[in-house]
Length: 159
Image (cartoon, rainbow, N blue to C red; front, side, top):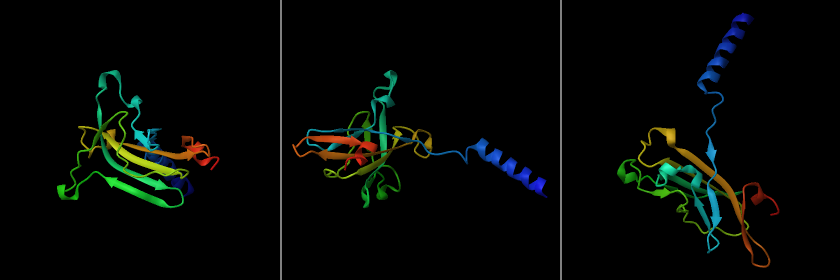
């Protein structure tokens, strides 16, 4: 009986490992974030997402979200119109173009932003080219009026 159970566990573990069900974790990518002249962030898909041969590649933006540490979700925008029976609204961006996070970010608050993208023209039911993007940031304004952007772990330090 013990031998049969051990064999059953070994076979199932191997099947899970082979199919990736046990070890598969979705990949999360980091967008570029820089401050614009108005001290608001410009969140964009990095230039590394295109090659010399695909400079004009466009991306569908599927959803965007903003979270505040300790508060939760502040803002969400889904680019699907319920009147279109689930067909996506047309919101495309190119690499380096600021995404439309229509939210007044404040100083000295830790924000987490998330969005999902897909390469324009790909069937959205096929998740092969869909990517999840996430990053934390804080806009820090010093006593002398200097404004700087802190990303990821730096956003959490020296608060």
